[in-house]
Length: 284
Ligand code: 7PM
Image 1 (cartoon, rainbow, N blue to C red):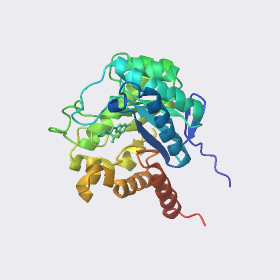
Image 2: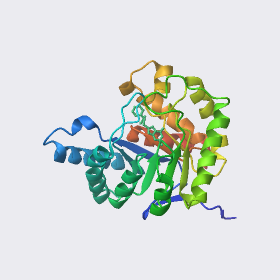
Image 3: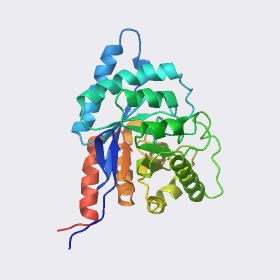
């Protein structure tokens, strides 16, 4: 008997991400410091090299962001953000075969990034800024709606929930339905509980446990735990030494039903996912 179950896929302006197995989104941060006078061309070339290395290492998507969402970070202007990301998106899209997602909350950046070739929107603010929902509907690209309590500058001060899983799930489903009502295709919506965004360690643990329940709503789930504080809380290691902890967390998230893992260490995560999926339900 042949299986007839259809596999979900994201169509990122023609570049497809087939969700038949856990997929990897590689993080490419365009840092402000790198934009000193005269260094611009070199910075773009370096970003493209990093993106190419991630594709070679097994990335299925590259997430490009120019606005720091780090707890305590200061906001960045539309102009600054565009100046950072647009040249990189153009070069990366021209040279790589995998799609690029734009990590932004600003509707104008979404527009210009997609015009420059980006095929997906990753918004930690779940399209709550200005006319972001209308823009996403018009651009008709996949969009990741992430949950965040508070704003980056203050979100880790006193995270509080009645029932974190219930609250986060309720928020994400409400946003998804709101977006669908305004013209975003259901098949273009990806959900993300937003690990570390206004969450204590216990909140993160409760959400991690609930990955199967959250994945059961039918929207692909994106999970980002790479190098985050939670990994440091278990291992007592600084950001740069959280690779092993991060790949274990990514593999477990995948086994629990996550569709896309947002990671910094693509090669290691790629191996981990291959081994984890092979050994979890062996076919031979
Ligand atoms: C410092 C602390 C710098 C934390 C950057 C971060 C997510 C995201 C980020 C996520 C989605 C990071 C975060 N995290 N987008 N953007 N999901 N969809 O660790 O978990 O990269 S920024």
